[in-house]
Length: 368
Image (cartoon, rainbow, N blue to C red):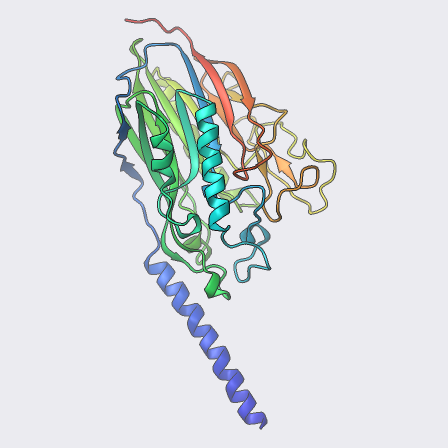
């Protein structure tokens, strides 16, 4: 009897190991391996302006949480659930996703801007029930240009590994940028660094979306949509990515251009107290700050210090209890002046992030 039990147990262990090997081999063979630089095609809804003719511009940034991380949702991976879900959501229900997407579209309509820089926008994913959020947003914006840069592309994400009936499934998601103006160039730039194998197989391929816009002053406006690494507790990946961005931004500015960056940095601005919005931090959450010496002092970080932009999604949102911080903001070059900035408080109803709206003035702007 003991031998029979041991044989059955051994067979079970062998099957589990075989399953894990198949998962890792399949994930490795289908892992998205983008080139360092990819030219992005633009889509249009109507007729965007051919160039920027006004020095006053408005921007909105927002990580949409792919429509699956509204206030009613928790997320298994935020508790380190690579192997088990721990009773947390792998995917929100279809009704919640629909509610979130509808709320996102309404919020965008209620906050008209010249530029929208969005992150975690699903194009065709199981977690958002195949909704093409990129096209849904574009349909709300008449006479806008749009681009999409994928940073999460997998035929099947098998997490949590030991609950295959709940598998995350197919994902196609990324950065989406919309503007009232037509760019002369749009590129996806792969950010350096990656997690060790096999973790990197199931993680996002972080990138920046860089677009060049002509202005009537003769200069160009360089707009960068960013989404830096998460789950990078030591900050090693973020440092590589920030070093890459520093060179990119300084080169663009020193060529005589205006430069505006916005998105989800997954880190706080320099000197910002990461736990400003909470009285207690029982789970020990932390967030690193961007190095104050990242760029010269005449570059400015622009954010609303009174409104949190991110909440931890390990549990459903509970005002006053859920950990909140600020990791979504703008960076502007010395020849751009911030006129106003405001966080848009939504009580995290539609995403685990909240949008930020900014108005700027392009300095020394004169029509040629």
